Image (cartoon, rainbow, N blue to C red):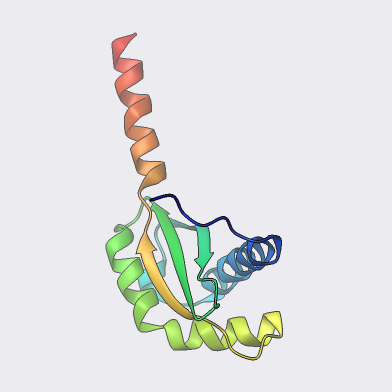
Length: 116
């Protein structure tokens, strides 16, 4: 079943939220977040803006599973920071999901280089 198209307002909110989440995660001082490059690849808000799926990619370090677990535990702090920075009354509930797209692309590049 095809996904419903996203309105321009929701798309803009998704991109603004992605940028702010990247800044918030970058400012967090926790040893579980160090040792790798953490990138928020995309954010998908539901149409009623009650929930946001946040896709996180980690290159290097201990791996994305530990980072996603830490961010899920700190989602209250992240949610309050998003509400304050974006000046929105009710920030959506965050669900952090591991995005392994960059690691998969790296794997494909290695396989292609081996074929040459």
